[in-house]
Length: 177
Picture 1 (cartoon, rainbow, N blue to C red):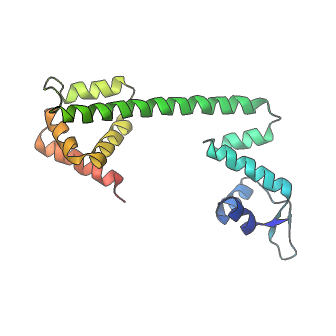
Picture 2: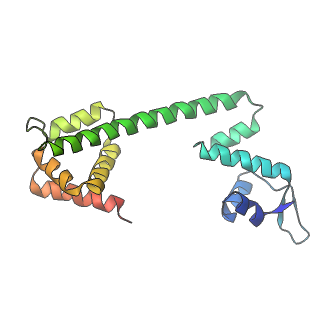
Picture 3: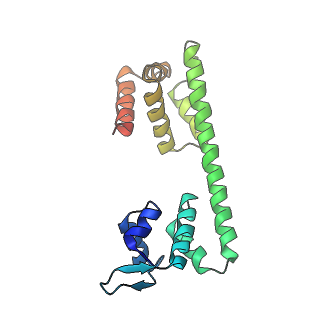
């Protein structure tokens, strides 16, 4: 039998995580010691290993709970849905990667053409599937990786010096600890 601290250390979790799992019924100890300490069996340990694997795959607690309660039928469906979601996340990241690489390439060639203004750039980003949060993240990454190029790029879009500085200031505050 394992005590809560031992089990937590084995899986790199906090004691409070295991207490939370107990509270929501995801992983309940098999017993208690005479002193009232939670005791986990090898079966409980295997269940925790499964929970940790599902968490690493990005599944939420609700999905994990459903998988562990089911007889296996819904497992494939839940994992398939997560796989599709990860695929969409990868696509979105690749779009951002291409946009950033293009911005840096354009900066190396003297900057983007004047025919691309702020409105057109925002429309392009929206057409690529980016929402406001994704656009903010793009500015954060651009500012983090190439602050001067970011500034020049913003100005090349016809954005005023004042607005460019505001965008950069917001971007810096997003990624600084």
